[in-house]
Amino acid sequence: MIPGRLVVLLPPHATPETLEVAERLAGELRCTVEPRRGRTVSGVLREGYEGVLAVSPDRVTYHHTPGAEPFFYHPGLAKNRIRSLLRGEPDTLVRAAELKPGMTFLDATLGKATDATVAAHVVGDEGRVDGIEWHPVVAAVVREGLKRTRVEGRALALAMARVHVMTGDHAALLRALPDRSYDVVYFDPFFPEQVAGSCDISALRQVGLREPVAAEAVDQARRIARLRVVHKVRTDRPEPAHLAGWELVRGKRRIGYRVWHV
Picture 1: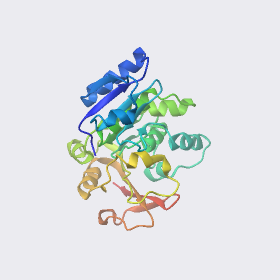
Picture 2: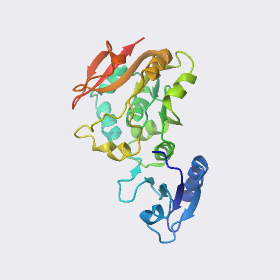
Picture 3: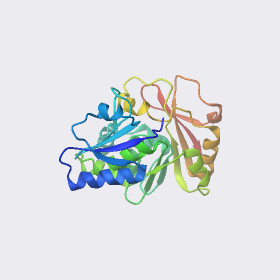
């Protein structure tokens, strides 16, 4: 659910940098900035706000329900996957999408930008990676996190900096794109049941879009893609009829990718 009444909460002794971040978020999300004044986040939520973005020197944290796990950006599994790629080990998404340096990649269901960051590492400076996130607060938190999170490893930092975040409904944004505008279009929807071992996205599941990718969006992706469309699937569950006949590339833990080739 997208909150109707938001506030950006400053830390005690806010620095000019944190104040700048807070004001940027407030401008993007059309809400106010307030000092903490000794209040807890749960206390602020009980004042009638439907969402609190707490700004600190190293992150922005989104609180939406008292006591619930908050959402914040961190590179998560992208760090390990990029390290594996640097060692010459394969990555299933990279293999399914046949990603190469210089390619363009559109992640239509961005979420925490894990897959987009891996793609950005592979396509490099000559390529382009754009991501669409439906939830405006998630998009804002991820955008800030990609810019400001300090990480170990130059390759990961460069990949994070290459990801461009767009906010909006992916079906509407896909309809507005011209034919053959990206080499690869990618969908990674939430599965009805969380896959064992994927706790990296548990906080995102509470606020993200739960609906499956509609057939119309897939049709638009096929129009937009120059090379292929990739859709993440559970290999142990029935798949949508509009993916019938697509190539299956199997991954780990009952995860796979259906691939449509232009």
